[in-house]
Image (tube, rainbow, N blue to C red):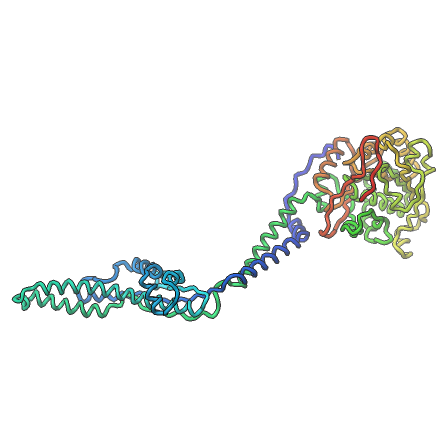
Length: 539
């Protein structure tokens, strides 16, 4: 592992996206539900509004041009006429006053104008008058009244224009002398006067009602179904974005691939989570539930895989010594040590487990061994290694059933294959004892009497014990727990081991396929530094 350059983080693939969706599904579901509920609540709080529309058609007759040879009424630009007419519907006070009178409404003219809007359809020469009200009947009535009053407004405007021309002709007639009344000029004026009087009565204003507004049967707002669908969509987008943001900010290692990339060594085995109750916070104390295969058959195959993987790293030394450690506590290093030892013993090997955690030892607790002399007594020169070894019957940790036991054991009897050297009394100077020449001699002696020696040590990020012992072993195995160990912890551990030149052969990924309901940062708070090497009781 030394001098291994950090690998670039791989881009997210489909598997990563699916993992985020699966693990953070509750965020997405919650956001979708909140979005839908918010949309529904908004729809219920808004007053329903109804919309009704009446249509006017523009029909330019050009009667003035036909009768007089000149244009008196209307605009020459059709498009401009439509735009001006549409603007007048909601802006001309006289139209609103006419609507108020026609309907006998108690609403003010301004309030009635605020209810309507008009738009021009220049391609079909139409003006659509739309009225909005909380009362569907009022909406239809106001739209029709504005259409009627606009026609009257345009009609009156056109008649006023013709009447003004007629008055001019009348003034010219009145200005003639009696002797001129029988002349051709007087007859021409008289003819125009009559023509203008007839034209005035024929004025329509150019607009007529094409269709009247019907009473709407349902409100156009709020559209509850549409709003809920939009709320669902917005909730889905926000929830997915929030899920990926939280996952991006979450520094925990979540899969084996990330663990391999960060450490630069292979994952030798993936261990399923079989002690979920404790990690869900229902039991804050340490538990021996994951130790052994009697109650958890799912542990058999992963540790067989780990056992087989280690064979490729012990070709040169048929009696290897492996050291197992982790970044912080409660990442499965001791459980990995014991179960690996059981698996090796059950395969026919003579295995010795050395509890080198002289600060917070757990091997004897997990295996139910009595408090006896151990490694500290040996390092103090009070005992020999063989005097403190305790026998563990590996067959006691197999699942019930003769076939399972016989299949795992093969043809060799398994009666004296696993021995444990407990920690012994906790010393005040564990680092000095572990770095002594006596410790190196003990490791060498044990390696000569066993097929494999496994050494359990304290977490590497908190104390240097594992680094001190690493020079006496053939390789180091790192234990990490997915969704618990962080990338920062892994990188710090990798950097520390690289600088020390430690040979790390691989890692064991614990907690695979665990649910997302519980994530807890684990500390090793019981450790102290200096020569006060005791530990405090866990809460």
